[in-house]
Image (cartoon, rainbow, N blue to C red):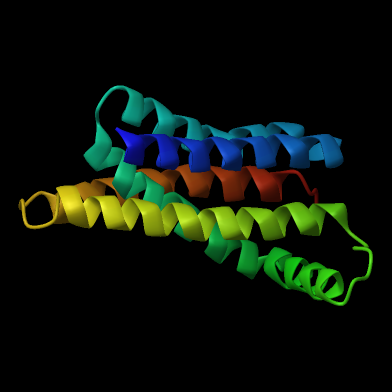
Length: 155
């Protein structure tokens, strides 16, 4: 149960970060709310003892988010802000600082879920199916997100 608390805490922290981003970027409030929903699903699956699915989604969802963040340039901006902080300079973009925090949380969530998966579910024969279905869910979720994001910009 302690492992569930850690993963639930990391998922909840990701949700909070998306809510913070929505307050910083009010034009994307619905987009950030939608982004936070997958992390709520992880917490709910843990609460209802569907930990196998929660671990799979907990590995896949932040992994895809990291790829998307890299693809649209958020990761580069976040690393520049971290570099400024390391040189004791004030960050120029609060959004990029939150993204840097989210990168750390994402990696921690992936590692935590992978560790728990290995401890509890590896070798049971359900891994490939769980990850395939989980990947389909995460892919559909992110396809909607990407479509919605690009529909926000006319032309």
